[in-house]
Amino acid sequence: MSRSTQLLTWIALGQAGPAIQDMMTARSAAYDIFQLIHRESKIDASFTNGETLKDVEGHITLESIRFAYPSRPDVQVCDGYSLSIPAGQKIALVGSSGSGKSTIVSLLERFYDPLEGRVTLDGHDLKSLNVKWLRDQLG
Image (cartoon, rainbow, N blue to C red; front, side):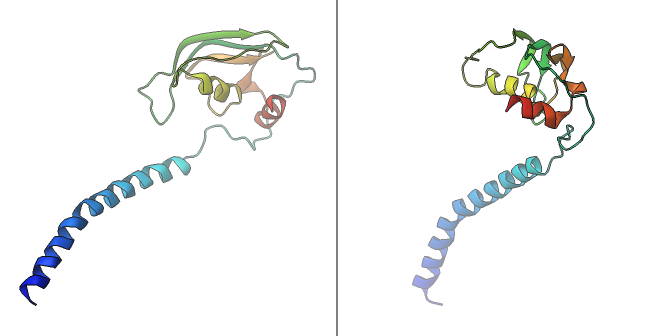
């Protein structure tokens, strides 16, 4: 092997180093993403048990909600949050990014349950309601 070939080989390897490091970082990130995708929810939407209400007025309350996402349990999104939405009332949740707007909707649809406090529909705790039925009402 000639000196020029050796030199070009070393130059190519030197330039490939950062790309290899980026590929290892991407591989690690992909692993984390797949862990999230394959995580089983504690709330089974296909489960047919639970109460269905015959006459829904639509009064929603969130009472002293404390919540953190399972993927980031050390970050409190809601800490003692309370809200009452009268039946038929239209509201807007306004706030900066990360202030909990989407979290409130996720709690209403029972994608998550609060760590403390309760969410009710017409006085019925959402945990007692049929999840599929509940989501059909909100959709």
